[in-house]
Length: 86
Image (tube, rainbow, N blue to C red; front, side, top):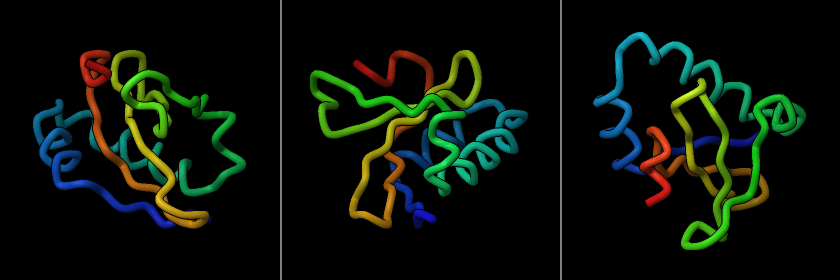
């Protein structure tokens, strides 16, 4: 199981999202804590300026970018639509 932490910018971005998504976001973060669920979440490595980061989808339009801080910790960096990759 991974420990999950959040960058302050991630929390600000979550607050700007539709309130109806909040429960689904929390559910997906809980899944992320268990490495066995990464396939289900379609976790994938990013490229370009996010070379050391990974991403997965909350729903069709919302993505979460994160990185592995250590072997036991994940840091959530950003959440939003495809514009978060810019």
